[in-house]
Length: 190
Image (cartoon, rainbow, N blue to C red; front, side, top):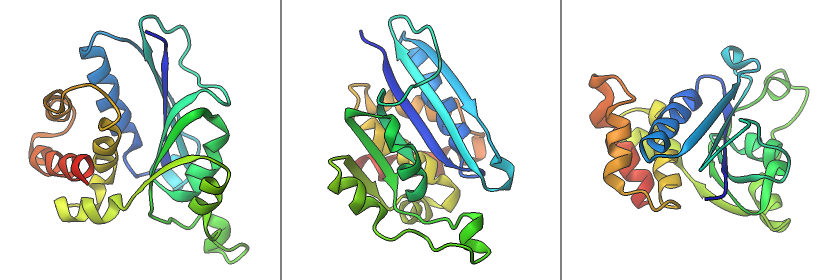
C-alpha cells in the first residue's frame, strides 16, 4: 500500500498527543509500518502543536511535506487554515469548529479571522467541519474533543469500529474509557 499521511494540528492542551498515540497504536496493530513525529512548539502556553502520522507497507520518514497530507485533523479553525498548504489535492480537512483566540487576539493586536472555513471551501479544499466541543461535552467532558475528532476520522477508514474502540481502551486511563468511547461514538455517527 502507498504511504498515507495524517496531520493532527491544534493548540497545546487539546489532546493532540493522545490522539496521535491512539492512532499510531491502532495502525501498528493493523500491521502497518508507522512513523509518528511530534512538533510541540509552544504547546504548554497554548501555542501550535503538530503531529505527523505516516503509515503504509514501509515508511522511511515521519515528516509530511507541503501537498502530501491525505488528512488534516484540526482541533481549531485557525490551525486548519495555518496548515492547509500541506493538504494533498484530494485530501480532507476534518476540523473542529471551535475558536481559540491566539495571543495577538487576546491582547487586542488582531481580530479572529472571519469565515476561515468558508475561505478554505472557496479555494476547493474538502472541509469536514464538526462541533467536536459540543459533542465532547455531551459525552462527559470538553477535553474529549480529540476523541470526537478521531471518531470522525475513523469514518474515512476501512478499519472496523471495534478495533478503534480497542485502541481507545488501550490508550486512555481506565477511569476515562467509557467517556472516551462515548465521545468516539458521537464523532463517528454524527
